[in-house]
Every structure is written in C-alpha cells, then in structure tokens.
Image (cartoon, rainbow, N blue to C red; front, side, top):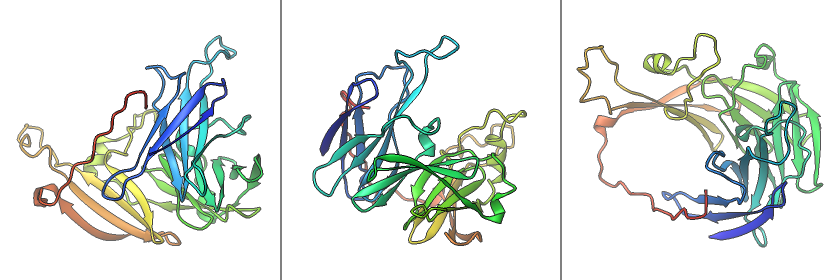
Length: 294
C-alpha cells in the first residue's frame, strides 16, 4: 500500500491510501478527511488513467455561507500519481472554472503529467494541466450527430479510451467522446447505446415530469478495451402479477454488445442466464479494514 497526504481548501490534512491488487482482485483506495461527517458524501475515485487516479471529496459543511443563508457544497478534487518516483497526492487549485460534479471530471495521462478535463454544455472543455499548473478552456469541434442533442446528457462515469481521448457515459442514452484533447480544438461526438430491455424500461423508467431518473449502474455498464466499447445489461424475469415468480426473482439474464470506438454500430456478443452458471472456480474478494478511512 502507498500513502500520501495533502491539504484541502480549509487547510485540513487529507490522506489517501492506495492498495494495488492483481486481477481478479480489486485495487482499493481509502481516503481520510478530518472534515468529513456522517452527513457528507463518501469520497470516491471517479476516473483513472495509467498512473493517475482522480479522487473527489464532497464536503457540505464549510465556514462560508451562500446567499440564501445556507452552506455551500464544495468538491475537492485530488490527483493521485503512483509514479514515476515517489507517490504524489495533489489538490487541484481553485478557483475551479465550473461547478464540479463528481462524475463529470476525467483524467488523461500525458507521461509524467496529466490533464483534468470537464465537458461543458456550450461544447467546450475546461482543463487543468499538472505540467503548467493552470486552467484553460478549449472550444470543441462538434460532430453532426451531437448538434441535435442539446443538454440532455446525464453523466454516469468517465474514462480514458487511449491516446488523447476521454469518454463520458450516460447509461440511459449515449457515450460522449472527446477526441484530440491535447490539441487546441478537440472534437466531440456521440455514440448511442443499445436500448434498455422491456422489463428494465418499466422498472427504471423516469418520472412523468422527468425530474427523477433511477440510476442504471446496478443493471448495466460500459467499458473500453483494445479500441472496443462493450455494453453489458442485466434483466430479471418478467412478473405476471400473481407472485408465481418468487422462486426465480433472483435470477437474471445478461447481454453484452460491442462496437469500435470509431463506429456506432453495435453487434451482439452473447447472452448468459444466471441459471447456467456454476460456482466452480469462483473466488471471494479480500476484506480490508476501514477504520479511519472512507
């Protein structure tokens, strides 16, 4: 495990611990922040690329008040660098150019340095360079498939897809790609995701006014490896309303599709049913103590 510390905006010492594990184990990141209370959000790793991790800490109780007499909500963004050299935990300096949301910020490795990137609805990208220690805004070229989309994009996750490109995922609709981030005018384009299955369209439907949208990360996910996006979605058995599916209610079917990052044509990879799985060869993830960490 490696441990590094830095100070947040209120000069509190924050500490990050990273424990790396080889597959099929999971690497773990723990964050210790003196300001955190049980009412605060849990710190989370929102993106990783090469030797860099992005850690977001959202604090709701700060000494500064807003215009309505309440407390501002602040997001501290830390960059953890595993190497080369000694590990480093670095707090991104304020003022941030936009109001940060934890799942909007992506990191792109540039050798010993990195770029921190956030897309904006005006088809621009705000970025912070650890090499120049400064923020900048770049106007993006917009692909024709993005012009109609407007602002109806709800970020779920962000990750690097290789080279100088980042992908922001809206699990309900699309993948937003931002290419050539190292250039003066990056390019934004969309890849539409395969539709939800009929059962999930009902179970996870939005409210009538569109203000409430159940999160979809429990039933689907998007990854990228070797130039291919892979979309996995799970669906439970349909109910006929008489309770006869009690025995099978914990069963599911998973379907995976894929498309190249330069394409938008999804092809079916395969489908598997939980009833066909065997426990043979399964392994349990190790448990870590969480005392003093989040």
